[in-house]
Image (cartoon, rainbow, N blue to C red; front, side, top):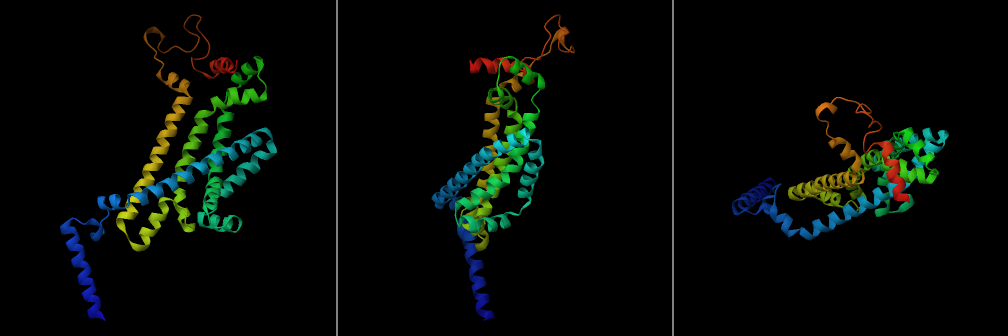
Length: 281
């Protein structure tokens, strides 16, 4: 048997050498293999589409759940600790254990992966929504109330727009984390690119493992850049404040020191209330 094994090993080595000499990276089982991408293009596209679908659905549902939870924690002081504590505990549960707990409820399917990602995203989203709402200046709230804003109009017309930087930061973190954690769904057959990574690891198919991993990283980077662009579009006052020049004798002066032009900085929180009021009107 040892002689037969030796012959098989020699044949495999010769095949690998021949593959390298002939440029056949699949036969040589190389990490970087353009031939794998061209020959398995449809398989990669299907896995990427599933990965994106699971990630988007999970993050959207997590945001819809996190927003009322954050509002409840802010409205009722007794709910503040339990909401933050529960979401933190959920985040500490290992992903394999989480899916094992969810399987009896949802069965084997994409819903198990989506539910797990929603629960994991709540920690980041709830905390960032609360941080954003708590960072709204009291002057902005008082100015809005003085203009006749009710609780709902105050929330959606003033507090939520001013809390967008913190909210979007949490959304970016949750999205990037969801892209990475979706791969774990391969244990139930719904892991997107994770399916290819796990299959490649079982067969030690180097090109498949590396290609699927690289696409996963690119998806996370692309999602983060897109959300950053959305954040910049939704918060133009942040860019305006960062670009404001201070030249000549005005440099070094504080607000109100320019001979009667005092008041909040252009694009500051208080200036945002009249702008919001104009949109509502």
